[in-house]
Amino acid sequence: MKLPRTTLILILLTLGLGSFVYFYEIRGATVREEVKEQKQQIFSFAEDDVQSLTVKTKKLTLNLERSPESSNPKWVIRSPISGPANDAIVFYLMDLLVKGNSDQTLSTPVKELGEFALDQPQATINITLKNRQSHQLILGKSNFNGRFLYAQADPATKPDRNINVLLVSTDFANAVNRELSEWKQPVDNSQKLPPLTIPKPTPTNSK
Image (cartoon, rainbow, N blue to C red; front, side, top):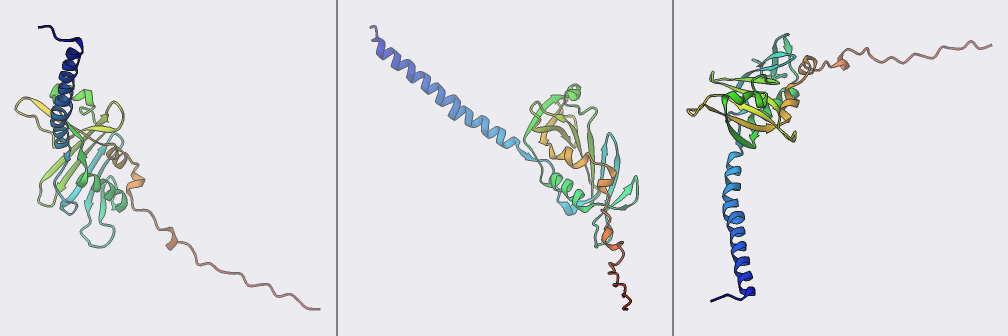
C-alpha cells in the first residue's frame, strides 16, 4: 500500500528528530561527560608540601627554596644569585601548580612531541616536595587559538608508546617568563630616605 505523501514526510521528520535527540542529547551527553572528566587537577600536592622549585626558561635557570626561617620572605633564591625572593611572584606560580587544571588530555605518539614544542619547551618547572618526591611540568607552545598551552606533567611513556599532552592555562607562561629582577624581593627604599628637615627662616635685620 502506497503511503500518502504527507504521512511519508511526517515519518521522515520523526526519524530525523529521533536521530537528532539520540546524537545530541544521549550520545552528546556522553561525550560532554567524557570531556568534563578529562578536566582534572594537574598535581595533587599542597603548597606547604613544596620544599624547592627550579624554573628553567630559555633565558634563565632559577633555583628557589623555602626559607628555613618562619619570617618573611618565605622563599629565597639559591641561584644564579643568593638572596630573598619576591614572595608574591613565587606564590602566583605556586597557586597555579597547586590549583591548576588540565582542560583536556590528548594521547599522542612520542615522535609528535615537536608538534607541541614539548621537545624544546619554553619552560620546565621541577618541583621537590618535603618528602623528597619530585614532579615536573613542561610547557610547550600555545594551541591553535592561543587560549591554552600544551604541557606535560610528570612525563612518562605509556605501554602503547604514547604520551599524555595536557592543555593548561596560559597563566603558566606569564608566571615563569620573567627577568631575574622580578624574582628578587623588592627593595624598600623608604628605609633609606634621609629624614625630612624643614629649613628655618633666616632672620631679617631690623633697621
